[in-house]
Amino acid sequence: MHTTFGPIAMLGSGETSLAGGRIFETLAQKLPSPLRIAVLETPAGFELNSAQVAGRVAEYLATRLQNYRPVVDVVPARKRGTEFSPDHPALLQPLLHADLIFMGPGSPTYAVRQLRGSLAWGLVRARHRLGAALVFASAATIAVGTRVVPVYEIYKVGEEVTAPEGLDLFVDFHLPLSFIPHWNNTDGGADVDTSRCFMGMERFTQWCALTPKDHTVIGLDEHTGLIIDLSAGTCSVSGVSSVTLLRECDPEIYPSGRTFPLAELGTVYCPQDPAENILAAAWEMVTSAPPLAVPEAPAEEVLELAEQRELARARKDWAASDNLRDQIAALGWQVLDTPEGQKLIKV
Image (cartoon, rainbow, N blue to C red):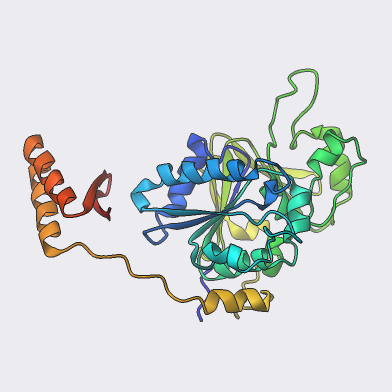
């Protein structure tokens, strides 16, 4: 089975903002349609309203990416040892065919505790090896790195600064990377430094001293993201601000719109065996999953009406265009007008 690594987008914040929407759109353009999206609830699984937290993102994606005929599932993998465990195979079925997988708000350390070594995390990594795009924001951005910032423990509970191990998504590619969202946060105003994910520079410096010497910290400004394309060997900055690469206190800043070689993150190793280091049970589930039903294709009559409508629109005969749209709808199809032209969706 051929390995096709999907792109990985890391967001500093604003997954449902205009900037976040553009990143999702960029990824969706290169993925199959209908687009199957899975939203993992895990990072917020300790919250009483975790379903609503993930549900809001799911609703946003269903609307923002409507031209790609999205099928959006929320995966309530909340806590080990419960009926909503990230090790529960039936619960995780939407991951088996997901083209885009998202994790976002919550607690970084909680996400790590629930996902490390879990079936859910194995499925996420397996799907990525087979081309699925991964998008992480907020707490999930921190959790998937080599080292974690215990955000709540430090600035809300008052614990000492520590740098515990994360899920280390990029270890298979020999890239020791840690991520800090909300890099340029200014919620504290002139009185309190809330940059570096609310820790401030002083505590961030202490955290850096606890991390491995050979690894890279990537600071993500708010409403800004980094798309890492392992197959193309590129990193692209998107959003309203910039991304900072920090090695041994030597920052390099890349503004939005900038693309730079993946090699700037380190010497990349790409596994030749797609199942290398993937949980065996997860790989088996993904590769043996029965194919989904093929979407129904429009009948010749529908295609002819759509062609007539396109000609009517070209000559600006809006009445004829609307009439043809109604005829198409009567046959069970909806017409969407997109920048790329008409799209037919079965209703």
